[in-house]
Figure 1 (cartoon, rainbow, N blue to C red):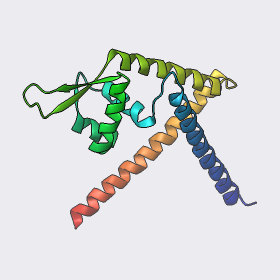
Figure 2: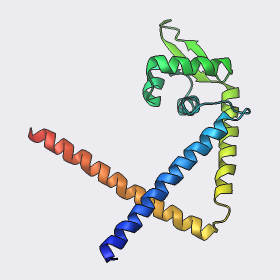
Figure 3: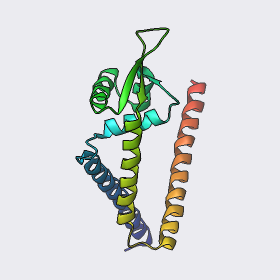
Figure 4: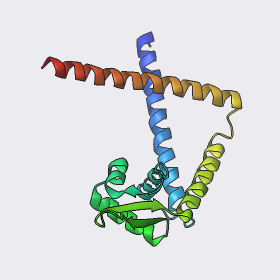
Length: 166
């Protein structure tokens, strides 16, 4: 096998491993969220997570944009979170048509518990890895992420430059 072919094989194996880790991690997280103690879907979890980023109440339109959901889909998600008492709807005092959503104390507590359970899952997945190996993995993944982000930024800059020429 030539050096170029061997290198291509290594990158193909790395790509497969990254895809597999992502897939398995997502499946594992979906299973965790669906457990009886949580009873959440990914969109519900992500909506709760986005609400933690807002100080106080968040407009439905802003929340739909932040979670990449249509207004109709988000309304259904919020309705189910309301049923679980994880969020509350608040009408804007100045404009009664404007609906805001706020995370309840119960919702915040649930998110904390989910995050603790996820941390336990990840620790279990890495139980056979030494702290040195974990540190090396972090450095390697950070390097990959930096390179990928730089490539994306370069493409955006090239796209903007191309548009300005047209």
